[in-house]
Length: 185
Image (cartoon, rainbow, N blue to C red; front, side, top):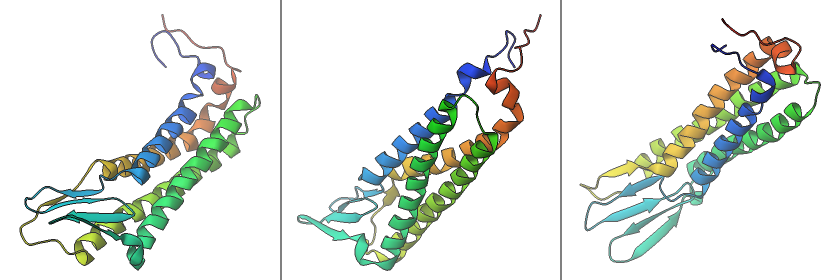
């Protein structure tokens, strides 16, 4: 693949590591307070997937789990995250076995696509419904922040890794070490 050749047997652990990174991004997104924020003084606001807090005279927090759309957004994003964790565990198992089953790896790619779909549904429900149902003072500027971005990163990594896991069986002999690497002159 490159000028000096590529040893596929060493590189087969890259995909599980990337799934682990997507899982870490999902954890950051689920735990982070940077989903929505506002610094328009005298009004400040911070929000997560679970609740939103505003500062007028003192901090007042409201749970988004009181709304049906809040439960829906959190539930769909959480299902996407759990599926990414399942894909991570399955990929570790699949690549630890000496005789890889390539259909099993395609199934991991399919689950990655499903996980990304659920995560994207939660990531779309949240901003639409927050801007529709949560009261913001007139003139405040609200922005979706870093934790929301980590959620999108997890979802997009799920899509990309789904493609890689689905295309990986095309290189089965290379990955298992059955083909001698070709070194370009």
